[in-house]
Image (cartoon, rainbow, N blue to C red; front, side, top):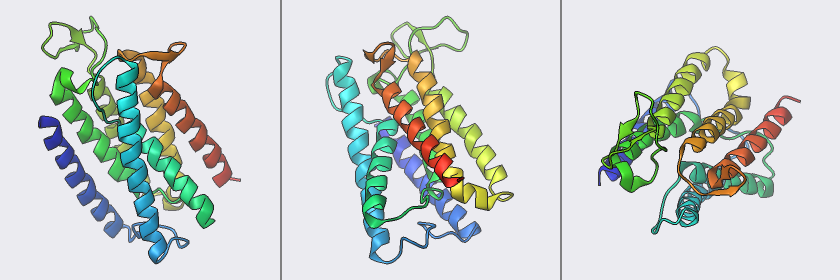
Length: 230
């Protein structure tokens, strides 16, 4: 229940701040002239479906691979699914430009607050880190000091959000063109690093499922970032 409370808080804060951000800078929800009319609602539906399906599918798959029963959720899986569904939609709708800028503050806040919920949920959430002797290791109740990787991710995204909000007013055109891809690269890189501190099953060498998803997202965003600047 505590995780659910944080999820509701995350959605409320992310939605409120996203609304403020769009109003402050007079942005459409989908800041792209190619997405108008009913196409906008189809696009939003594709994003939502991708987010939900990706989150549940990859979160549950990781638990199964790690020998843990039940269904799971994954923000990384959700972002991966949303990106996949969005790019497939854009391909068939013949949309060539970036459409994700307005989602950057929302996603950052969802992750920042959501990871606090993961931390508060403790061992049941299966997002804790491996054992550590570092002084900030945290005991979730089983007598083992673990890396609080949930807090690592929250702090990482908080730093990114602060930099984004500071830089955006100065270089709006740059961020409109590149912001979403920069966010994806940053998010995937920091997530890739933290995955080494988690007890998940390795499926390819030293890499777990989320390492693989992070690598794919980094490659995707790097390719599209280069395309947007050529």
